[in-house]
Length: 206
Image (cartoon, rainbow, N blue to C red; front, side, top):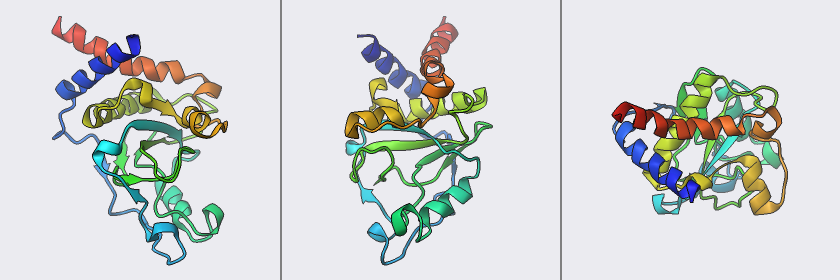
């Protein structure tokens, strides 16, 4: 089917255009806070998964442009029901200008999209209130490039690339506006950006 074909094209494209040794992000994992409180779940760490268990990607909007403040909020003891989370809930953060930050190891299966404590999806936070307005083009394109790279690295099909709202409905029957794409109308633009990576490669080779 078309989804399968697109997935195969994206995986092949990522392998050619986005080799593993080319950094796509700034690694700030060591700079962000962890909640090491004895009362906190897992004391600074989420459930640890291996690469073979990673089978999906979840897009979120972060509701703010302040990465550090979000990380501080998630890990403070009184946040998130009184104990705080081990880390921020985003493995990657994509700023409005397209800069990408690697925040938490992808091997940490964090709780973020209503699909359980032992989560198998990679969490990507796109900065801003993206239910009010679509992401800037730089942010959309950077997210598409990041997703294509992660698809190649972990063998993820495009049908397993979804928004928080999609996974929440599938896993728990819960509705949320996150990542805002159905409210602000940019869902199709994101998937078109992924598909355009393939078209651009074909045009370049032609």
